[in-house]
Amino acid sequence: MAPRFGDELELIFLNPCTENYLEEFSRLAAQGRTRFLVRPWTAPAREFVQQASPLNDRCRFYGLPEDPGRPASGVSLLEKGEAVDAVFFFEPDPARLSSALMDCLDREREAVVAPVTSRYFKKKPLFLISI
Image (cartoon, rainbow, N blue to C red; front, side, top):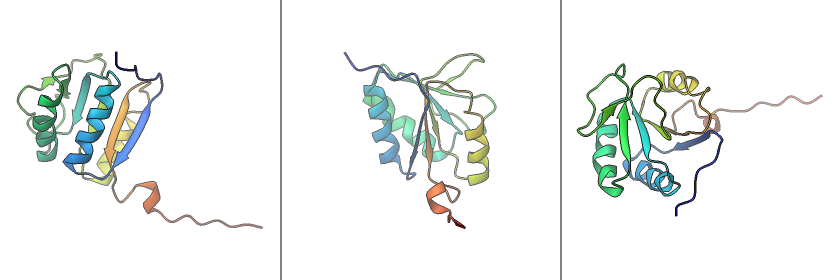
């Protein structure tokens, strides 16, 4: 039996290419996660779902009705109050991604997967002043 995932929010940043998303999807599915929310419906998001769907037939993909773009075939719209096991962000705009990540603050045990952007903390300088 696959190990169960923890009771804490997991935040994963990765370089935005399909292979990295697929690798993370496989890792999360191996933990027993089966319900994946994909946001927003960009071309890379559709490509990811098309390639990830055949990898694990127990997994289901969802979208939000308010997200722009057209979901890939085989994707269901998430009903209000429905839970997911992981959220995959494909938002290329750093400001919109930051805002979307803020919406995840109340999530308790999902994995949140997002691309590294120019706002990623390791890309920002750090200044220390010591007295």
